[in-house]
Image (cartoon, rainbow, N blue to C red):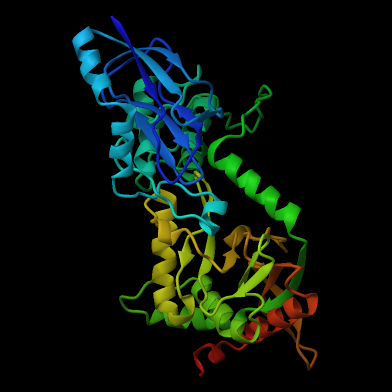
Length: 437
């Protein structure tokens, strides 16, 4: 019996350290070659490290959330046979790193700062797509129904943990898509199924739970804190009558043929792009270190998208050149790529302005946090039908929506923000102008 120390290899791009975001093994586990050991996160991506040898885990580097240096011990494995160990050690950590660095880049996850600054260079060797990792990885908890049921069911860690807390066997939950989502679990529970669910409405007392902030959630927390700490935000909200635009949207959908179905987002993005040329200070990025603002000619629109891995911002490149049907198709494609982890590096970086929408949950008004280094973020809120007095005193039902914008006061004045929203309001309330030169 010999010991094999597997050091965290150089993942490339000058990374000096990585965070352990998920252990797939613990001391005493027996692993085979290429079995998953841990997920580690750098500033670029989340990478699944796999066992280079077969054996028994006798030591691990630390707990989930710990930061370890490149080249330091990740796991120590007891292996059978001196000859096998010598052959394995001959292919050094340097060889492993070269194999990783020479592989094709794969975008598996993205934090907001790397969306703004850095390309993703994630090794493909010893790495699965994040969607596959999430679908396969077990959540270690004492209250899980069974190990087998967890491995058979395709679900994200958050859904697995919630199911485990409720005592629900995920193999009994029907997924509407490729993976079981929270909505699928809600549907299952609504029928009174599952242990620990109380259809009578009586709430079940739960113990306090302390959760370590790690991985994507830690990155989001850091970047949102940096944004609020460094950017003097101000927000402006105005009410927009969306009735005519909604009527036009329904007419367009009724005659769309094979084209994608329109939501409000493509029409709103078209209006945003059409109104921006007169307000270049909004489609801009601010370099704090250099003390300079870049006003961008093209609109690379970031679309804030909630995923099971956290908030991601896929980017619609040159949105100003697309018609509403092209925008609809690109929105659907990018949102799905962000959610299943298949988005490419160039699809998750370089945005110049961000749109964030909670859809039907949009509320009355929002004060969104700016996606640094951008200087503005736009947030449409929920469309609500309300009575409105006409000029002749008659009352009509109209579809109204509040539109929020947050801006960097170092670059954008309040007058500029208000003037831009008024221009955008005019286009949305007179939708025929969207198609006028």
